[in-house]
Image 1 (tube, rainbow, N blue to C red):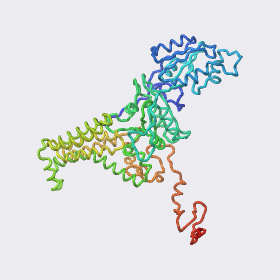
Image 2: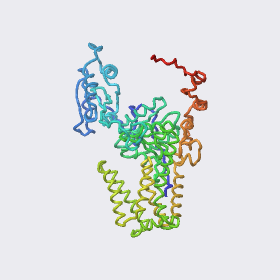
Image 3: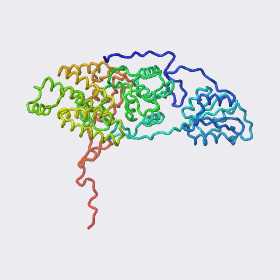
Image 4: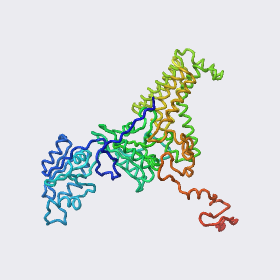
Length: 570
């Protein structure tokens, strides 16, 4: 039931874009090329052709003036989206007066473009456009357009000044030791956060537009020479096949480009942490971001990534390995504990120790439902309570969770509606699901608990084993851009296993993940291994002094340890 896989067809006449600067002009992805309308030569005609599609909105500003006091022109922008201080100070003021070195000279219309761009304008990001559609798109994105009578072109200036949220700590990926910066909704700011951490010429960004109405900018980021070129081309090919009205979040893209659309398991990882995105870029993965979303997609993704955090690489490997084992134990506990409880209580009570069985039977005395119905009711109640807590305001949600867990649970036991042991099992299961760092992976496990409980209620322990075998078989069939979902465990790879259940020391993980087939496999230099193989020198040992690494020889110091003697005079 989970094995269907979507076939992607290569779209006609849609080629992935080559890497280009963020502000470069690009054709839209998922949109048929519309007929090009040139900018009219006459000023009033050009203003009307721009004003008509925009519908005469109240916030549309059309300011007519004369460039250098001679050439009739008009500046057009949306007051709520453009930085009016930049429009007034950097554009209008600079175009009102002729530059000093041109005073007294005749300025023909043919030279006006050159003088504006190279001599007069106080703005660095401006260009001339001949297409009316490009000017309209720029105005809709907060840019400013200047049209001049007789020029036949429009000047497009980047003055976007939309109010944005400040960079703050990520809310969904909390860490104790790590960066406190998170992505925000503006794509340009998110790209700057990545460039800040990757000051290299190999960092590549390809920006396209997806959405017939929203025209959302989508950025594909990768490191040239590390990311596999075939992977980058496949990501761009799948994105180019999307043809829809709008893309409002990276979650929209995830549902279009994932390999198996009917699997409960996520095949792409999302993050709002720039440091996590950079770490995956260094491994050879591709980052996908959308303008308007504070999350980024990581492709490809394997299952082991969903119980790992960025903090795992900031702490020592022994402690991190212990924490990862605890996470995996909580993951398994949250998945199979309710079904095991139902199977043992309903079909195999002889597996329970006698003293414990007496306590369980005493607690279940008077409960009107069989164990499978009891567990399903409690599981459904916990899901409703969790969703209500999540959607309510933060001040009310905390109080509701305490009331739901303590008061309602205690009242249900006192009324004989459920047994105490069932409340304990469901509570431990819920706590175990909270230990999974990735919300979408935890959601998949929460969903799979229900069919496992059904199978346990129908077939006992055999049903639990059948359910687990089906889940394992499905996970083995999954791929993320061709990468097996359970790699590097299946298929096995020793180097990759150093960063799965347990984490080896950073200096021992000298190769990038083999399943990504990166052109440059080595990420730790040979000198590091040579340095670590040298004997340890205790530089500040109280008995020994000197250090071979710094050109000195080890030796035994004098009895006074080099002190000049007691300097006190009594």
